[in-house]
Image (cartoon, rainbow, N blue to C red):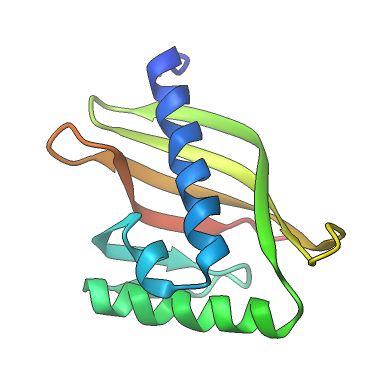
Length: 134
């Protein structure tokens, strides 16, 4: 596979920027709009969960958002983007996430990869996500 094109990199950047904006709402429905079920999520411990419907994605992310908020998370940011092309309409985007407290200090940090695909030529949506083990 070759290097990612500017267009692929920009598409991944835009996806993660949209993710940050959706995350800031702490609304699982907003985050779920960034996914195209069926989705497979792989947790940091290596366990996986299938999310066959949009409602499953909403519930999964709402539970995570509620947990993060309960721990004092106020926002998130990403950095260190790596993009790998996967055919004509898909790519793998990996980022390091930082969850931030209201004062801007880092609550937690972790790396995740997302399988992204364009559906009908639109903005990419995730069909898979995986937390990298520490």
